[in-house]
Image 1 (cartoon, helix red, strand yellow):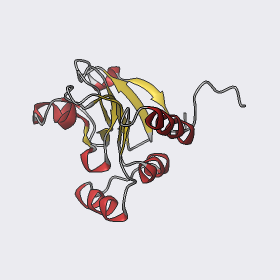
Image 2 (cartoon, helix red, strand yellow):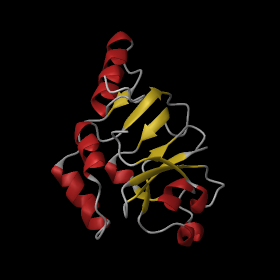
Image 3 (cartoon, helix red, strand yellow):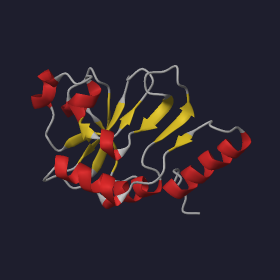
Image 4 (cartoon, helix red, strand yellow):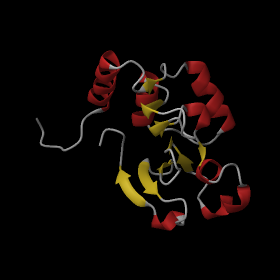
Length: 151
Protein backbone atom coordinates (compact mmCIF):
# COMPACT_ATOMS: atom_id res chain seq x y z
CA UNK A 1 0.00 0.00 0.00
CA UNK A 2 1.46 3.35 -1.06
CA UNK A 3 -0.23 5.42 1.63
CA UNK A 4 -2.01 7.41 -1.06
CA UNK A 5 -5.54 8.28 0.18
CA UNK A 6 -7.15 7.63 -3.19
CA UNK A 7 -8.08 4.39 -4.90
CA UNK A 8 -7.21 3.56 -8.48
CA UNK A 9 -9.76 3.70 -11.28
CA UNK A 10 -9.69 -0.10 -11.39
CA UNK A 11 -10.44 -0.32 -7.65
CA UNK A 12 -13.18 2.29 -8.02
CA UNK A 13 -14.92 0.32 -10.77
CA UNK A 14 -14.50 -2.91 -8.79
CA UNK A 15 -16.30 -1.27 -5.85
CA UNK A 16 -19.12 0.00 -8.09
CA UNK A 17 -19.51 -3.44 -9.69
CA UNK A 18 -19.55 -5.10 -6.24
CA UNK A 19 -22.29 -2.70 -5.10
CA UNK A 20 -24.27 -3.55 -8.24
CA UNK A 21 -23.96 -7.25 -7.41
CA UNK A 22 -25.56 -6.60 -4.03
CA UNK A 23 -28.15 -4.09 -5.26
CA UNK A 24 -28.49 -4.12 -9.06
CA UNK A 25 -28.36 -0.75 -10.82
CA UNK A 26 -27.10 1.11 -7.75
CA UNK A 27 -24.59 2.59 -10.18
CA UNK A 28 -24.75 2.80 -13.97
CA UNK A 29 -21.56 1.86 -15.78
CA UNK A 30 -21.64 2.43 -19.53
CA UNK A 31 -19.81 0.09 -21.90
CA UNK A 32 -16.29 1.12 -22.87
CA UNK A 33 -15.50 3.75 -25.48
CA UNK A 34 -15.32 2.44 -29.05
CA UNK A 35 -12.82 3.53 -31.68
CA UNK A 36 -15.71 4.96 -33.71
CA UNK A 37 -16.93 7.10 -30.79
CA UNK A 38 -13.39 8.37 -30.23
CA UNK A 39 -12.97 9.16 -33.93
CA UNK A 40 -16.24 11.11 -34.01
CA UNK A 41 -15.25 13.19 -30.98
CA UNK A 42 -11.81 13.85 -32.47
CA UNK A 43 -13.36 15.13 -35.71
CA UNK A 44 -15.75 17.47 -33.86
CA UNK A 45 -13.01 18.68 -31.49
CA UNK A 46 -10.21 18.89 -34.06
CA UNK A 47 -6.97 20.12 -32.53
CA UNK A 48 -7.86 18.93 -29.02
CA UNK A 49 -6.24 15.81 -27.63
CA UNK A 50 -7.47 13.82 -24.65
CA UNK A 51 -4.93 12.83 -22.02
CA UNK A 52 -4.11 9.13 -21.97
CA UNK A 53 -5.42 8.71 -18.41
CA UNK A 54 -8.93 9.86 -19.34
CA UNK A 55 -8.94 7.92 -22.58
CA UNK A 56 -7.90 4.75 -20.72
CA UNK A 57 -10.70 5.32 -18.17
CA UNK A 58 -13.31 5.87 -20.89
CA UNK A 59 -12.19 2.73 -22.72
CA UNK A 60 -13.23 0.78 -19.60
CA UNK A 61 -16.50 2.69 -18.99
CA UNK A 62 -17.50 5.48 -21.36
CA UNK A 63 -19.28 7.39 -18.62
CA UNK A 64 -20.93 6.34 -15.38
CA UNK A 65 -23.48 7.48 -12.82
CA UNK A 66 -22.73 6.93 -9.13
CA UNK A 67 -25.87 6.34 -7.04
CA UNK A 68 -28.38 6.20 -9.87
CA UNK A 69 -31.28 8.59 -9.35
CA UNK A 70 -33.40 9.15 -12.43
CA UNK A 71 -35.37 11.84 -10.58
CA UNK A 72 -32.35 14.16 -10.75
CA UNK A 73 -31.42 16.10 -13.90
CA UNK A 74 -28.05 14.35 -14.12
CA UNK A 75 -29.41 10.87 -13.35
CA UNK A 76 -27.09 10.25 -10.41
CA UNK A 77 -25.17 11.74 -7.51
CA UNK A 78 -22.05 12.13 -9.63
CA UNK A 79 -21.81 11.60 -13.38
CA UNK A 80 -18.74 11.17 -15.55
CA UNK A 81 -20.02 12.20 -18.96
CA UNK A 82 -19.55 9.85 -21.90
CA UNK A 83 -17.07 11.19 -24.44
CA UNK A 84 -19.83 12.22 -26.86
CA UNK A 85 -21.09 14.67 -24.19
CA UNK A 86 -17.72 16.10 -23.18
CA UNK A 87 -17.69 19.61 -24.59
CA UNK A 88 -16.42 23.11 -24.00
CA UNK A 89 -17.12 23.75 -20.31
CA UNK A 90 -19.57 26.68 -20.49
CA UNK A 91 -21.80 24.82 -22.95
CA UNK A 92 -22.39 22.05 -20.40
CA UNK A 93 -22.35 24.25 -17.30
CA UNK A 94 -24.85 26.80 -18.62
CA UNK A 95 -27.19 24.55 -20.58
CA UNK A 96 -26.04 25.50 -24.06
CA UNK A 97 -25.99 29.24 -23.38
CA UNK A 98 -23.02 30.52 -25.41
CA UNK A 99 -22.82 33.96 -23.73
CA UNK A 100 -19.97 32.89 -21.44
CA UNK A 101 -17.85 31.01 -23.98
CA UNK A 102 -15.16 33.70 -23.90
CA UNK A 103 -14.80 33.35 -20.13
CA UNK A 104 -13.25 29.87 -20.52
CA UNK A 105 -10.24 28.87 -22.62
CA UNK A 106 -11.28 26.72 -25.58
CA UNK A 107 -9.13 23.92 -24.13
CA UNK A 108 -11.32 23.60 -21.01
CA UNK A 109 -13.85 20.78 -21.25
CA UNK A 110 -16.53 19.73 -18.78
CA UNK A 111 -16.29 16.03 -17.93
CA UNK A 112 -18.90 15.71 -15.15
CA UNK A 113 -22.31 16.65 -13.84
CA UNK A 114 -24.08 16.50 -10.48
CA UNK A 115 -27.79 16.43 -9.53
CA UNK A 116 -28.09 20.15 -8.90
CA UNK A 117 -25.26 21.17 -11.23
CA UNK A 118 -23.73 22.76 -8.15
CA UNK A 119 -20.19 21.82 -9.16
CA UNK A 120 -18.45 20.46 -12.21
CA UNK A 121 -15.16 18.74 -12.91
CA UNK A 122 -13.31 20.42 -15.76
CA UNK A 123 -10.36 19.16 -17.78
CA UNK A 124 -7.93 21.62 -19.29
CA UNK A 125 -6.66 19.84 -22.38
CA UNK A 126 -3.72 22.26 -22.63
CA UNK A 127 -2.11 20.81 -19.49
CA UNK A 128 -4.13 17.67 -18.60
CA UNK A 129 -5.17 19.06 -15.21
CA UNK A 130 -8.59 18.55 -13.63
CA UNK A 131 -10.38 21.31 -11.74
CA UNK A 132 -13.54 21.62 -9.65
CA UNK A 133 -15.67 24.70 -10.19
CA UNK A 134 -18.88 26.15 -8.88
CA UNK A 135 -20.83 27.45 -11.91
CA UNK A 136 -21.19 30.91 -10.37
CA UNK A 137 -17.39 31.33 -10.21
CA UNK A 138 -15.14 32.45 -13.05
CA UNK A 139 -12.73 29.86 -14.43
CA UNK A 140 -9.82 31.64 -12.74
CA UNK A 141 -11.30 30.57 -9.37
CA UNK A 142 -11.51 26.88 -10.30
CA UNK A 143 -9.79 24.64 -7.74
CA UNK A 144 -7.10 22.22 -8.90
CA UNK A 145 -8.19 18.63 -8.20
CA UNK A 146 -5.67 16.35 -9.90
CA UNK A 147 -3.16 16.02 -12.68
CA UNK A 148 -4.73 12.75 -13.84
CA UNK A 149 -7.65 10.40 -13.23
CA UNK A 150 -5.20 8.19 -11.35
CA UNK A 151 -5.00 10.63 -8.45
